[in-house]
Amino acid sequence: MISRRGAARRRRRGGGACIVALLLAGCATSAPPPPALPDAPDARLAAVRAREDEVRTLRARFASVARLPGAERSADGVLLVAKPDRFRLRLMLPFGFTVFDYLNVGARTWTALPLADASQRDRAGEFAPFSRDDLGQAFLRGPHAFPGQCDAAPAPGGRVWVSCREGDELRRTLSIDRDGIVEETSYAAGMPRLVIRYADYRAAGAASLPFRITLDYPQGTQSVDITIQSYEVNPTLTDALFRPLADAVPSP
Image 1 (cartoon, rainbow, N blue to C red):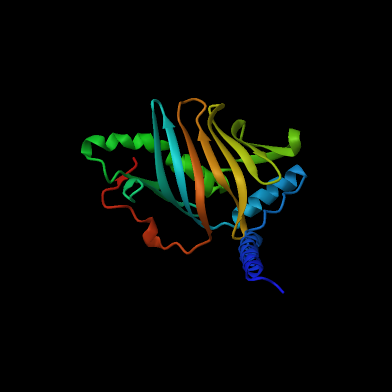
Image 2 (spheres, one colour):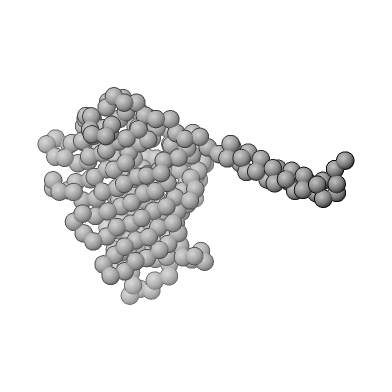
């Protein structure tokens, strides 16, 4: 015969087992790791580009830390991408106040600093890393990421090295491992201008995307660390989401 105390112990053990089972069930339903890319250099480059072509629209929420000379600024952000040429990024303070809005539609761009007065409009330069040419390069992809003719070759550590040239000018180099692009460098006048590093690739819907992104400027003193909080892949993004704010200033 089982005593009341023994029955209680069994109920407690049973309850603990149920909690463990629920935790394991949660782990089992998490997204599987993305499939590894091919080994052959040309095939790996082609697979990366095919993956990117499958992403037509994107919404991402992220946290960022921008490091400037003598200052460090943190902000949350929302990114909207509609390929090939619509891009919006909004940076917000913890209470949801927008401090910077950048919009690109085709060849036109606008910036807005909703909390700044007229004497502070020149502060827009502080947010240069969040422009189409920089962070936009990391998400619009296509010709922004693979300009000109791109050639792939094997590299140490099982990686693939890609160089993209327009005529005799080197425009972009990329290092690709089995998960995806881990580093890409853009050049101006033959000198490195911007290095973007990608890490923590995970499945996001049907896509495989990095959840850690770092922008580094070799010729300057700026860097930006970005942690992606969530992705929505191929959501419906209406035209209204790509309209300039009332106080937005068009770029010359």
